[in-house]
Image 1 (cartoon, one colour):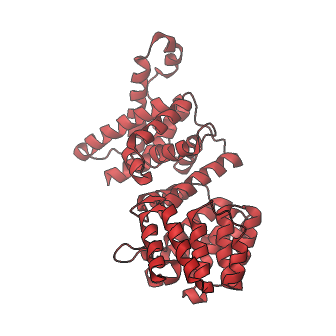
Image 2 (cartoon, rainbow, N blue to C red):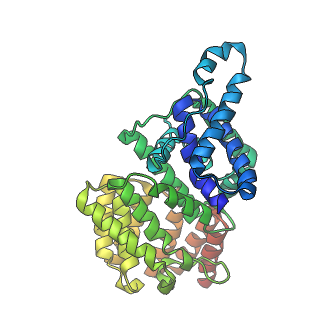
Image 3 (cartoon, rainbow, N blue to C red):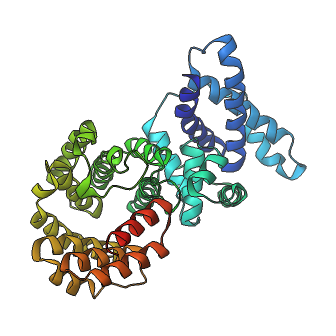
Length: 387
């Protein structure tokens, strides 16, 4: 209980300190000390009446102690913060989280640094947990976070919710979710801690438009996770999944969200992707999937947000509507070096067209290019069935 509460309050407390004092790195250190003090004291002394206020006060004192110990050249700034800690600020919840997300996605930071800092400062994941999730050395993640905090030195928390900054936040959350949904490498297909955190953080954003579209997309995609692997951990393709294992609650919420978003705001790429996911999730069986509607949505998505994966996914829908030969003709325009899924889709289309040898070679080519062990095993098993 206490651990969950601390995780929930941490970004709000950090936001309060950065807004008052500036200096992301020093404020983050002060908040970590306050969280540690709480984790030690609260189980013994009980929860304070105002946990967030307690944390803000404690972290503020730590921040002031840091200023008092700094060198003479910092004395001018020190005088600003030597006053007694402020009274606990009112809990502003969503606003604090959003403004902190905006700071973590500052345009001066690289995308990997934005992702790492967001998971650390807003998500509450440790450096080790982030490193394990992305299968990179802990030192690498630590360096990214340290460099990011140094770049943000002196930045104060402002509510500059311009479209570009919010778009960066959405992209970072989308990247976190995507890596959790289909890990790019390693022996696990899903990393639930990442998808769960991406959904939690997206819920903190002000609803509407693309924010609602992204949340709907995450829920509708995550709904299928329980059926994506079998009892042995092997990957199960969408058409073969047991749909009774899908999360009906997520589907209901996701469909309601995307229906509302499409009817009340300009259409964006996350909304279109969510609409595609909704068509899949609402089909009772794979055979009942309305591929014509999905193809229409991909045609729109190709105009709104063109890209290699959109092109590739559209080819799959095009094939379902027009047949494998027509699909192979469409696939000819895809960049074969863009992603291992180009080979995987080609293999599937060749198999549907009856070219067993070509399909087997393409499946093996795809398996050699992916770093995901579950995907490798699945692609190799497809090739073996065609031997």
